[in-house]
Image (cartoon, rainbow, N blue to C red):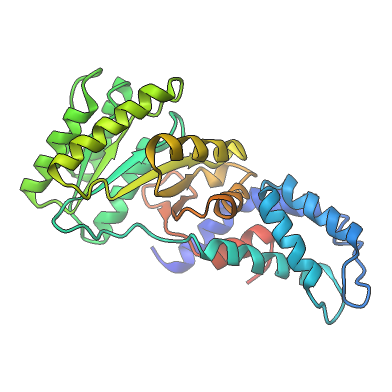
Length: 313
């Protein structure tokens, strides 16, 4: 995929988010008059409220407000200058967390546990990650560790067939740790570069899920003490601020090391990407802006910042 094509998809994917922020700022920026190149406290308060309403979160909004308060708008605090200042500060926030997944484990395989609530797009994201790794010439294997739902096993199997990658699976209700054990053993013997493991997404019983994941960690440790090398949480951007509470819970029960945010093209709440970055500082490995297999990619922090703030290239 060309860089231009991906930029166009990001622009389209964040259109609802950008429109929402533009709507919240309408009437504020248009009426802004810089006083000696400065914004008034009331104007700053209104802008901060608009940013919070756009799902950027109170921390990021306060940070951007402080930056605007310190800014010297040489030609007056007009709308274009303020949007650019907002974009610049969002970019600073996102640059610190924009980190693609890197396959570094030796010996192989590099084990990636993928977690997330049911309905977050977790299984499809696993397929898209596998495709992304295949494009980098890595050999990939999947493990159907979400044995709680037969549909999850079946869906992952369909994706494995489409991608032409092996999958290790067991019966519905089977022991996830046993499946992971078999998968790591098979991947090790085959010299597979990356093993992506699906896991249960239920949160109704945090203790049960924590125990299950702890068992998987123990089993992995017997074969490869460094595994899992990544614990990736898949977040559905349409959940807005509720996605942040999922980060909190899964950090506790699973030791999340990084995030992937999906469904950004279907929501006006893409600002939560900024909120997650500012509040947790976890690496955001990739974003999803469509349903096609190649619609998940590492993101360009500066591009995303400009698109959210509504700043033209």
